[in-house]
Amino acid sequence: MSAVIWPLPKVEESVFADWRDARLATVITTAAAWSAVRPRLHGLNIAAVLEITAADLAAWQSLRSHVKGEVLYAVGGGLAVDAAKFLACACALPLVCLPTALSVDAFFTWASGVRADGCVRYIVTRPPDLVLIDYTVLAEAPPSLRAAGICDVLSISTGSWDWRLAEERGQNPPTMRYLAWVDRIAAAILAAALDCAEAAGRGDCDGLKQLADCLAFEVQLCNQIGHSRPEEGSEHYFAYAVENVLGKGLPHGDLVGPGIVLMAQAQGQDVTPLRRALDACHIPLDRIPPIVVQQTLAELPAYVRRHALPFGIAHVLGGE
Image 1 (cartoon, helix red, strand yellow):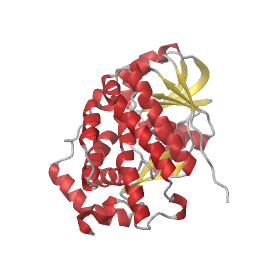
Image 2: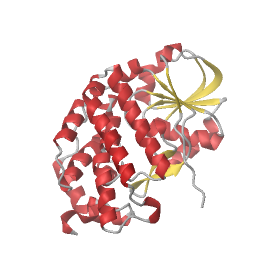
Image 3: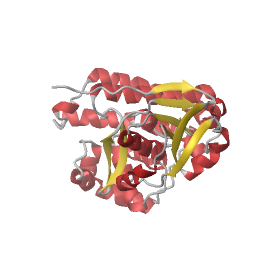
Image 4: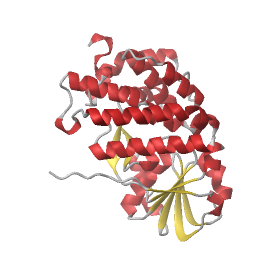
């Protein structure tokens, strides 16, 4: 049996205003991100700018004929880079990613998340060829987005707990078998994220650098074992389910952050350090109306079974 172990993209620290690329480029972006950094990107040879508004596969496919030039640039957060990874794959073009906030781990991954049938599914695309990091740009991002990617590391606390629960219940398939040494590495990455939360939330360069490193380590750890059980569990399932009720609009961190706290509480964990880190990174925990939270929690066991999501505390909420 053969398996692919995906690599991380090349990462380069560079001031966006100093970056030069003579290749004809198509920019994949969102309106807010493009408005924030467009004046800094005078070194690009831009042929087209395509605005992304949803994680929708059909919408992405419709943009293929509008791609021009020799290279794609993803400018923004997870929505832009996921669409750009799909288009880079479809059009066989190199991809450069310019994050405008450390809002997700998608800058480092080989997959794109799409919304389908009321859930998020990850389709194989490819990692960016290059990720350019400008710490000044990251520091200037809106506070609630600046370091929201910490949610994709703090989720180790609940995702790994779910992974252990699944092992105890005999619910881990052979492709996702529990590995104690991987769990220990994931715990060290989680500790590093907790350590840098305050500095990253303030926009300090060293704090943002450590958070970027945590995201990269978390992604490559999952790449090595071929699945995301150490960092994705019931907290993400809650986010997927609640998004169906709220509709698109809330950022990833606004959904996953509350999911981490709620699922950690259900697991019997001390949520104090998690809350402290989320607060330091300005992740709001009150954007989801309480009635929607309760409705989602009540429906979550049925939701995760309906979508065949890997076993976790969400499957047994309410004593099921």
